[in-house]
Amino acid sequence: MSASPELSIVVPLYNEEDNVVEMQQQIDAALAGRDYELVLVDDGSQDQTLARIQPGPRVRVIVFDKNSGQSAAMHAGINGAAGAVIVTLDGDLQNDPADIPALVAKLDEGFDLVCGYRAKRKDTPFKRLQSRIANFVRSRFVGDHVRDTGCTLKAMRRDCREALLLFNGMHRFIPALIRNMGWRVTEMPVNHRPRIHGVSKYGFGNRALRATMDMFGVRWLNSRRTRYVIREERKSQG
Ligand code: UDP
Ligand code: MG
Image (tube, rainbow, N blue to C red; front, side, top):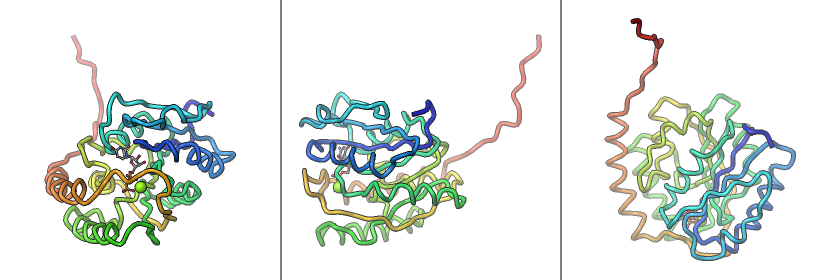
């Protein structure tokens, strides 16, 4: 693996002890022959997640002192990534690493962020309904034009990460924040699988209300965001 690999794969992990080994194997199989690093972020797991991570030359592990949330874990991994392209995915095997090459190839069509959307979602009917309403409202309210921000499987050019200000809940607004800074965003269908091991970290109570409040904040933030281009830098004389 080179010091600046082609790809960084970033995975947030919170109590995923029965998923992490299989996930690493699936990533290895999907990316055989490619120059990539795997950045695993252990978000204060209380189970055996950290102990079960398989070490290797491609594997880097960031360990939080305590559970700090999926947004924090993704932010740490994305900021710590050395690759030209950064791919994020869930560590519970619901996303399929086999989709990664197609997402990365899509960037070459002239995009900076490619968002996966779960065409055939394998979650409970209640969760799918919540998600459908949330996506309908959010995509219009913040103007991200993305049908499924809850799908962690995304590929971005590394420069896009400057748009990702950290706040609790940021991970749902990655397309909104990146698009607002002028980057080109698209989406494509990806596979989705049921969660076999471990439990979802979210329910109605800790997702629906928070994500709704965050929408207002992101809309305000995006309306106030600014960019500058430095024409030149001069040494002062004297
Ligand atoms: N996650 C995390 N910290 C948290 C909550 C979740 O790192 O505080 C990780 C979790 O281990 C998984 C991903 O974020 O890899 C998505 O979580 P989950 O599968 O519970 O979300 P859902 O599929 O229910 O939307
Ligand atoms: Mg999941």
